[in-house]
Structures are given as C-alpha cells and as structure tokens.
Length: 235
Image (tube, rainbow, N blue to C red; front, side, top):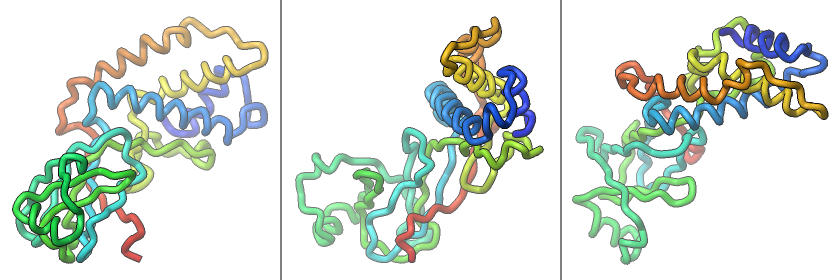
C-alpha cells in the first residue's frame, strides 16, 4: 500500500478529507498505531525488526551511546579490538564487579575477558586498551520502524520501502491493520463516538492473527540490515 492509498483509505472510512482530518493529525495517529503494533510484533518474533549497527572504536573511549532507534532490547554485542579477531562480549552488572572502574583496574580485570555494561543510554566496554578500529563495534538490536510523517501522505511510494539506511519501512502485511487502528482511534475520539463496523470491531482478533503469522518467520527472510551509527562523539 502506498502512503497516498493509506491516507485515502482512512479518509474514505472516516468520511473525512484533508481539512477535517489533517495530514498532521493523520500522521500522528498512524505513528502511534505503528509503534503499538511494532511492539506486538516484537513480542512474538523479537528478530523481526533486527538490525546490526556498526561503530568505530575510538582510542581510549569506553562509552558509546546506544542508537535512538532501539525498540526494546539488545540482542548481542561483538567487538574487534585489533581489527582482525572478533569477540563475543557478554553483559555484566556493575554491582557484581565490586572493584574500581579506573583504566588500570579495567585493564587488570578485563584484558582477557572483555565484557560490556549498559548504563543509562550508553554501552560501556570493559576490555583491553581500546585503539582506533574502524567499525570495530557491532551491536545487534531491535529497532522501531520509521514513523509515518505528514509529508509522506501524498507519496506514491510503498510504505514497506525503507525510507533510509537507518530505519525500516512499514511491514506490508500490517498496512491495512494500521489504517484500521487509525480509523478506530479517530471514530472513538469524536465528541459523540462513531459506531465501529463489524470489521473494525474485529481489529484485535485480526491483529493477533497477523502477529502470530510472523511467529515462525525464517530469519533468512526477516528484516535485517547493517548500517553505521554515530553518537556525535566523533565531532
């Protein structure tokens, strides 16, 4: 479904136009619906929105901000500290470390067993001395699909097309369900709520059927991409 068809479908079933249901409001409702549905998909198949992010290791730098797009969890972290050998990094809890976090202590305790810790919105590396390694850090994570913007609602581009290399598009099998959720939210938001049709009333049932259909998705066919990410610390 194209973005234009998506908007036209919603306005047809709500008996609105661009004046009574503006692009800004339609996009807002659609993005909320998309986020909610994406969370349901991720609960059933956590790898469906999997993406790998590559990041340069910077000499002496142990803190790396996490990408803003991360949906609900980190799948795995890998690193190469010499640019040749890749290592799997297990996570550990700083509370269990019970030792100083100065560079000397880190080198003494982690040079032969690198690990990582999540603190706030950052990933901290505990390892041997860090040198400059282009794309030396790999993060496997679950991310949100790209939100639906008002500027796109007249576009003939299919919604499933990724808008850029950093974000997923909207999964094709959920286009109609997202539109239906927007229609429901619009009708329920009226001062006098508009009665739902039989199909609209079946939304939750149909959503769960669609979500369950991706439960056993072969990961060779899941949505996986690999892109660099940048937290601004390089500038």
